[in-house]
Amino acid sequence: MKLYGTPTSPYTRKARILVRAAGHDAPLVDTRTEAGADALARVAPLGKVPVLALDDARVLPDSGLIAAWLWAHDAPALRAADFALPPDDWADRERLVAVEGALDAAINRFYLVRDKLPDEGYVTRQASRVTTTLAWLDARMPEFSRPLGAAALSLGCALDWMVFRAVVDLARTPRLAAFRDAWLASGVGAGTEPAG
Image (tube, rainbow, N blue to C red; front, side):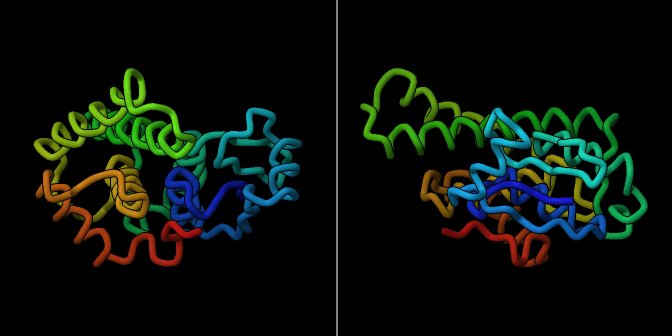
C-alpha cells in the first residue's frame, strides 16, 4: 500500500490520519518531487491527490473514497481509534460537503492569487464562498468531540491548512476557532501537520 500526496495537502492529511488509525503502513510518496509526480501519473492520470494504491493493484483516487474504503474494510480499527464514519449519517455528510466546499474555494483562491491573477470575478467569489461557508459552519458544527466523524476530521485538516496558508481569520468564527483549539489539543493529526 502506498499513499501519493503532498505534506501540505489537507486532503492527503485526512487520508494519512485514517490510514494510520486503521493500522496500515502506507509510505507517503511526495508528489511535489519529479519522481513522485511521475509515479502519480502512472497510477492516477488525473494527477489529483491523495491517491491510495492498494496492494492488489486497485487505486483509490480521492480522500472521500479512501475514507469510505477504509471504513468498509477497517471499521473496527477505526472505531478503536475513536473515529465514526458511517455513510448514512446524513447530518455529518451535509457538514462534510460544506467543509470541503469551503476548503476547495480557499485552495482555488490561494493558488489563483499566488499565480498573480487579478482579485476580481471568480477569484473574489472564492473568498466570498469561504467566508459565507465558514459562517454557516460556525453556526452548525458541533463542538469537537470523540469519536470523530468525517466532517470533524475534514474540518480539522481544513482549518489547519487555512491557518497555515493564512487565508482565513478564525477570530470571525469563534466556534470554529474553539474547535481548532480542541483539535490541536487532541493530537489527532500529530505528525501530519501541513509543512513545506
